[in-house]
Every structure is written in C-alpha cells, then in structure tokens.
Length: 275
Image 1: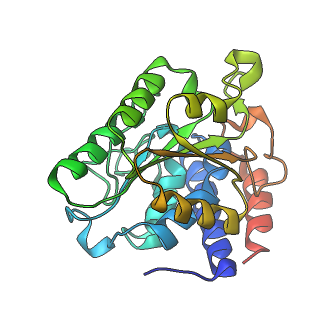
Image 2: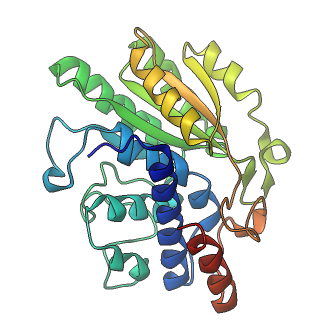
Image 3: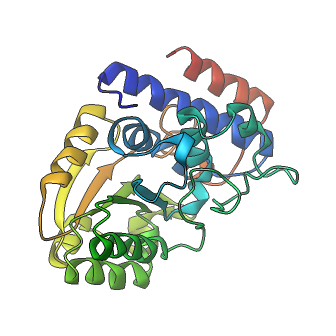
C-alpha cells in the first residue's frame, strides 16, 4: 500500500497523533512532545516510502526502520497500528503491565518493530549494521534511522556517522528530528550540536534540510535520498515539539509528561477537528 495523495498522508499523520495522545493518556506517563514532532515523518515513511507488509512483518526483503530516540515509542506504535500491524485499541494500553507496548520499543514483543531501542545514541550503529548487511547479501533493502537532536550529543552517534560514510552506505537514510528541545531545555543551552547539517556534511553525508511538517518536502527528501549513490543521506527535519496540540507546542515541559483528563479532552478535540 502506497499513498501518494498529500491530503491523505496529512490525515495519516493526524491519525498517528491521535494514537499518541491515546497512548500517553492511557499510560498516565510517556513522551508526547517528541512523539508528536515526528508524526509527519513516520506517516510518510510507513504509508508512502517503505517497502513493508504488515502480513509479512519478518520478511527479510522488507525495509527497516530504527527509532533511535526510543522514548518516542508512542509515535512508532501509533504508526504501526494505523498501518495494520496490530489493533489500534492496544494503543490505550501503553505501558500497562499486561501490554506488549512498553515505554521503549521491543522487537521481540511488537510486530513491525525492527530494533529494540531506548538507550540514546545507539540506534545509528544498529542501522549501520542492517545497511551493511544488505550491501553484503545484496538484499537491496533501505534502512531508515530517526535520531533526536538532543540525542546527537552522544559521541557514539558520530562514530556511527563516520562508519556509515566509510562504508558508503547509500542505502541508509538518517533523519534528525530537530525540534530544538530536550528534557532540560533547548539543545543550544544544554550542549549545542549546531550547525547540524555542516557536521554531517563534514562526516561525508549527503545533507537535505526540510520543514519536518511539510508532507511535500518530506516525500521529496526521501525520494531524493534514494537517488544518491556512494554516501549515506541525512535529512535534517526542522520540527516543533508537541506539534498538533496547541498547548504542547514548543513547550519543554511536555517532553515526558502525560495529559490529565481535561488536557486529554482538549487535545483530542483539536486533533479530531482535523479529521
């Protein structure tokens, strides 16, 4: 299933956001801010770009996705549920003891999860292994890895970036969710990684800068990445933390806090108004 209609992709992104809010409200904990900021990216990946089939979740020829910023699991779960990997009613059981939807993705429990993540900084190394393996066995898969902009303060990210460039992993596409906020404040105040694009360029990456909420730009960026040969691509997606819920947007306090009942109702009213 490949959706090419831009308005339909926007609707899928909104559906993913609804699932995110359902999850964190049901859990009474979680990370809504950074989950909401990457919803448009995941909508394009799961409904327009990736070669995947929910009925064949372990197919060796499938494309892979690594959510390196594993605390954004509510976004990944919602994307997978909307794509048909499991019943969307499960989203409200996020972090419940009788649910497989834990606070960070577990590939052994959740259909469609390609890598167990959560310890920040490690996802790109995992994605490198997947991409290199595909190069060696000629499977022809593409690997996508989503990083947080605070996460790229981790040194292992840059070791992995050097490795991806050294092995010319042109089947690897990295996305940086550049919402400019992490748990304690702005990324500039904590440990500035700017200029992000120039840093990746110096490590040998093809660099694409986009508005991470513009579906047309996101599709074009992924399409362009597929044409690049001899080097990995990184898409620097400028986003807004909490995007789609007015009182959460660009508020650092919503990095890791669940809405109360009134906030939940307000958020859902705003999101469902767009359906």
